[in-house]
Amino acid sequence: MLAACHSASRGLNGIVTLKITKTPKCYVGGAFIRSESGRVAPLTDADGRFLCNIPLCTRKDLRNAVEAAAKAGAGWAKRSPYNRAQILYRLAEMLEARADEMAAVTSARETRATIERIVHFAGWADKYEQVLGSVNPVATAHFNFTVTEPAGIVGVLAPEDAPLLGLMSLVLPAITAGNAVVALVSRESPYPAILLGEMLATSDLPGGVVNLLTGDRADMLATFASHEHIRVLSASAGAGDASRLRHGAAESIKRVKIHPLETDWFSNTHDSPYAIRDFTEAKTVWHPIGA
Image (cartoon, rainbow, N blue to C red; front, side):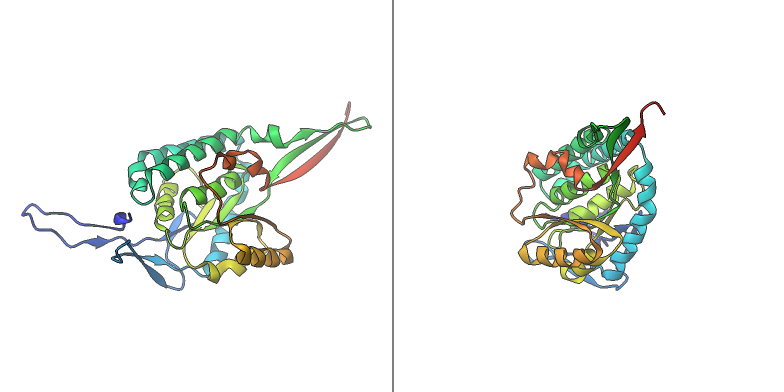
């Protein structure tokens, strides 16, 4: 399932050479980083065999990722919807090209569903404004219309099941709307997200728009909830974590979107453009008629 963490080769003389263990790293600010703590956790296969070490990120890593997202977010928000759509289409193409590699660490079904979801949101990138915005009738000599703007930095807590599809189902609506994302990926199955980070690094998506951290949720949940620069939280969480997120978020008055643990990430309900609305702010403009 996770054999991509290491490899072996056979030389010309027929002798099997020493396996070289891959060193997975987190993807933050367009670069691959180790945790500032230096801590790692072993990742094993179903038979308990060691595969590789996964960085255990800390609250400082999270704060650094938020800084990276803040630097990249303004530029991403200014991109035209058409340009954001083309970049997402390109990401889908990259995942398609490495579909067999990703399927080896998740499943062919999940990989295909993720590609299709990326393409779906790419298609909405230059159209959701027509769904979420409006022209409002008023009883004065004005044009009155409502448009959407990105909310800012979005914190994502990914689900344990469907570690690729679930993660991207939370990330895609946010970046489609022009937000930057800091995501804590699956603790039990982090490798699909690490492989995704390798694709993001060579995609057209600017570094810092999507930042992927690995580690224990308990170590960072409170910081996700209370960090004042994170404006929206989108999390797969049980009742206990959901309560802690809402309580912490109340101090900084941020929006919280909770997805139950039993969520079916393969459902096409996650393809709705109204998922994008959770990551936007509405701006109403009044313009005098004839001016």
